[in-house]
Image 1 (tube, rainbow, N blue to C red):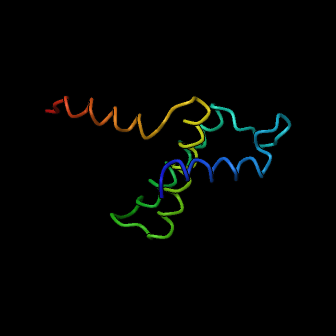
Image 2 (spheres, one colour; image 1 turned 90 degrees about the vertical axis):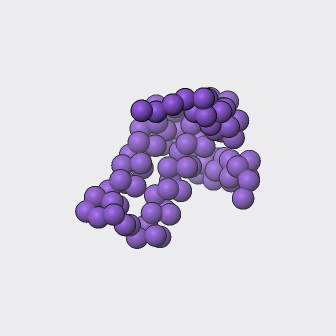
Image 3 (cartoon, helix red, strand yellow; image 1 turned 180 degrees about the horizontal axis):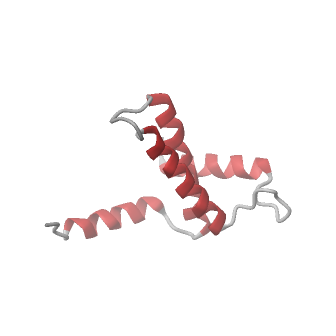
Length: 98
């Protein structure tokens, strides 16, 4: 699936829940989304807390949560994640690690 389709699906979902409305109990502010992103990433880490493997379905759910918050945070800031990833890969290609 293309990134644009994922972004649109995320946007449609959040809008359908009313989370962009000013009176939303779950305001989709950059701060709240950044916090949620980190919390979901911690849930990914938790799956590996006591071993080197994780339940595939649980991992897929948590990774999807991370991506949804990432997509939404990027959208609010007008960041094209596809372009950002490619630019970062190009910069990293020029780097050297010890």
